[in-house]
Amino acid sequence: MQIIREFKIMRRPNMKWLFKTACLLIIAGTLFIFAMGYLSASSYTNRLPDQRPNAMPYVALEVEKREMEGQQQQQQQQHVKLQLSPLNQLKKDWHDHAAMKADVERVGFGEQGKRAANNDESTRELERKMSLENGFNAYVSDMISVNRSLPDLRYEGCRTKEYLVKLPTVSIVIPYHNEHFSVLMRSVHSLINRSPPELLKEIILIDDFSDRKYLFKQLDEYVGENFRKVHIFHLPQRTGLIGARMAGARKASGDVLIFLDSHVEANYNWLPPLLEPIALNKRTAVCPFIDVIDHSNFEYRAQDEGARGAFDWEFYYKRLPLLPEDLLDRTKPFRSPIMAGGLFAISREFFFELGGYDEGLDIWGGEQYELSFKIWMCGGELLDAPCSRVGHIYRGPRNSQPSPRKGDYLHRNYKRVAEVWMDDYKQFLYEHGQGIYETIDAGDLTEQKRIREKLHCKSFKWFMEQIAFDLIKVYPPVEPSDYAYGAIQSIGAPSLCVDTLGRSRHAQIGLYRCHDDIRRPQRNQNWALSWHRDLRLRRKKDCLDVQERFKNAPVWLWDCHLQGGNQFWSYDREHNWLVHGENNDNSNKRCLEASPSDRKLYVNICREGNRNMQWKFGVTNATALNHFWDLVPKLR
Image (tube, rainbow, N blue to C red; front, side):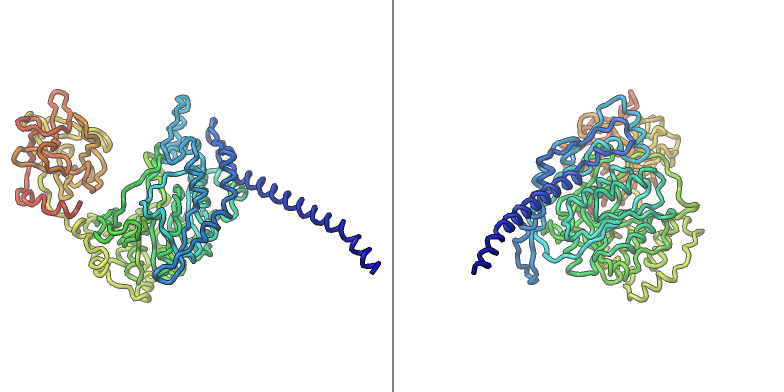
C-alpha cells in the first residue's frame, strides 16, 4: 500500500506538466494557422509583376482576412441543414454565406464589380498601350484586387435553391496564350474562393506556348506559393485552344470537366447548378449564364436574361428566344441547341466517350458546333443553368495578332464539322461560303465518322427538327428578299442620300450627293431594309444603329447584331417615314431625319409634314412590305 501511495504522489506533477504542454502546443498551432492564413490571403496586387511603374496596391481589411480564413467550419455547420428531394436524394444549401457577407462589406477600387477608371493623366499613354496589347484595359486590371467582390445578379429564387448533397468532383481546365497576369490570376482566385473545396479537385492551367516572361517562373512561383490545387503545364509548341483543352482534359482526374477561358470571374454558388444535372444524368453538358466584364473598365454586368444558342449558315454563333416552358421557373436549367463554346461542364467519362474534340480541328473555330452536335445527336443533352453565372471579358480593340498558322484553318475546321455531322444540310453552309469551301481539303475524317457510327448517332435532320426546330425560321438557309434596297434619297433634299461618308464601323454616318442611279448606287449608298428588319449596307453586316433616345440622336454604322432593339427599322409607306424601333404608337414614333445644312442624320419624334423625315428607296418590294409585321411578335 505504501508503494502505491508513493507512485500516485509522484504521478501528479507529471500530469500537470503534460496538461501545460498540450495547451502550449494548441496555442502554438492556432497561431501558426492564423499566420499562414494571413500570408496566403495577401492580395496579389501587393506583389504585382513589374509591368506598371505605379501600381496601386489593394490592401484588404484585417478583420475581413480573418473572417475569410476562419469560415470553413462555419460553412460546414451551415451545410448540415438537409432536405429530402422528390427523388429520395438529400439536398442542401451550398452557399458560403459567411464569405458572401464579407464580400458585401468590401470597399475599394473595382469592388462589387463596379466600373474602375484611371484618373492619372500622366499614365494615359501607358494605359492605351496596355489596352491595345491585350484587348482590355490591363492597366486598370492591375489596380483591382485579384479576389474582388462581385454583384449577385442571380434570380431571387437561385439564392435559396438547394442542390444534391452528393455532387461529383471537378477538374477545371483553363488554356491560355499570352494572357495578362492579373486577369489570369483573378480568374483563378475567383474559382478558388467561390467553389466548395470538397467539390474542386484541381485547376489545370495549360500554357499554349506563351512568350511573355511573367508567365513562366513568376507565374509558377506565385501559383506554388498560393494554391495547392492549381497545376500549370507548359506546352512545347502552339496547339491552339482545341489542342490545349484536350491536353488539359487528359491530365484531369475529376469526375466532371469544366472548360473555362482565362479571363473570367466566377460568381456566387456557381458550381452546384452546373453539377446537379450531370449527377442526375452523366450524358448532360451544362453551360453557365455568361455575364459581361467590360473590357474598358472591368464593370461586371448581366449580358441578358437568357437565350438558346444557335448558328447561322455562315457559322456565326446566334441566339434563339427562350420557349414558354423555359420561363415558368427561371431557376431551372433549360435546353439549348448550341453552346457558346468557352464555358461549360461535362462528365469526363461522357466527354471521352464522344471522342473529346476532333483533334483535326486546328487552333480555334467550329469546336462548339462539333461538340454540340455530338452531344445531342449521340444520346446526350445540352442545358443552360440560370443559377450559375460566370463573368467573361469580351475583348475590345486590339493590336493585330500574327496568325499561328498559314492558310485558312477556320474554314477548314468548319468543313470538317460539316462533312462529319451536317449531312445534306452542309450544302447551305457551302453556298453561303461563296466558293471558299471548294478549294479546302478537310483532311482525314475516318476516325470522326467511325465515332459517329459506333455511337449510333442520329441524323442532322433529326437535330434540326427536334432540337433546333425554330432555327430555320429565324435564320433561314435561303434568305428572303429585302423589303427595300438601293439608295435612300431624301424627299426634302432630293440631291442628298444616306451615305457612309467613307467611314468604317463604329462611326457616325450622314448625307452626300446621290449617285446617278439610285436603284444600283455605289457601295457607300447601297442600303437594304433586310428581312432581319434592320437597315444595313446591302449584303453586308454593317447596320444603322441608334444608341440614344434624346433629341437629335445620332445615327451610327455598327456591327449587325440581329436582335432588333436599337437596330430595328420599318418603312411607313403612307408617310414615307423610316421609323426606328418597334413602337407602333404614333405619338412616340421616332423617325430618321435629314439635316441638309450640315449633311447630318438624326432620329427624332416623327412629325407629319416634315419633309426632312421623308425618304424614298431606290427599289421597294411591295409584296414583302405588306407582310412586314406578320412575324415580328414571334421573333421578338
